[in-house]
Image (cartoon, rainbow, N blue to C red; front, side):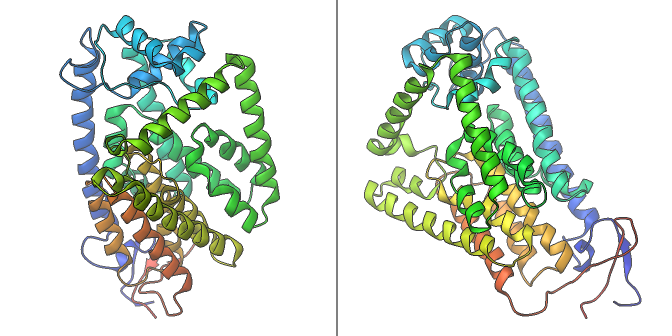
Length: 415
């Protein structure tokens, strides 16, 4: 390393001048996060300070149906959450609003374990409480991957963070579950399986986990996840009634029929299948989605079966999960932060290849276009980036060297 090397708190970031320094990343990310926080505070206050939490001329906020499903569970009518007319009636009863863009509950009954506690408190309390708890969980998962304040602050900067918070949706919770599960999968597989099993509340996001666990022969994590998934399903039937499962299946079939039959129903999606809403035929959209899903599954299988650094494996599974699922919304893209965190973790330990950090920065900017296939394309670019990293035979552009028992590192010119 060169004689003029200097110590920084986050390995590798100061090895390239310009934007990619610890102080500048912290400053810029803090500015973006502060802007989000101010806008969110104003918006949340506007909503909860009124008798009606949503203006009549605006679409319903997604958190409404989450709170309503929990309220129906508290009232002993959880199966009613899957009935459009029943949840519309509940909406008018609790909010005094006419019908709006609010569909029935189409999550597995295990989701009611999450929403029922929300129904125990008023909407004005539940909304900010849900955001605060799940955002903390999301940031904690990022910190487990890269234990440094810059990483946590940077995790607040992607646009999907704002999008999730303003809707009050479950993107933070999903990302947190996936992040913690991947952190633990290598050395604590039984505990990791608990979080993987909990992720089945949104099963479309976990379809590549069996592929990865089978490819890596991680039988303990697979067994744990299976046991937890079946246990949660059984407990949900006992807690909320067996009829909730048939109601969920019917609601899911109705949603699938709506999306496949109506291009406008695919508009909120950000997967490759979303091109259906842009005028492309349904068969062409499904074909593109299938090709992307197979590619993502093959990449995950290749990396998890091989002798590659674990952060690359974890990154591929997080990023590939977004590519493989046709039913991905903007708030789900918070999972991309988990994948990028693992990718950056590998860069901080082994050095970054030429163009990697610039590509990641461009992908961050591209997420401000959180619609159509843009997030799916960004996910594909990042997956190719980490495949290149796994297969690249040359020397990295910069290799940080850890020293001592602290986070301080000495960074100089490449050897």
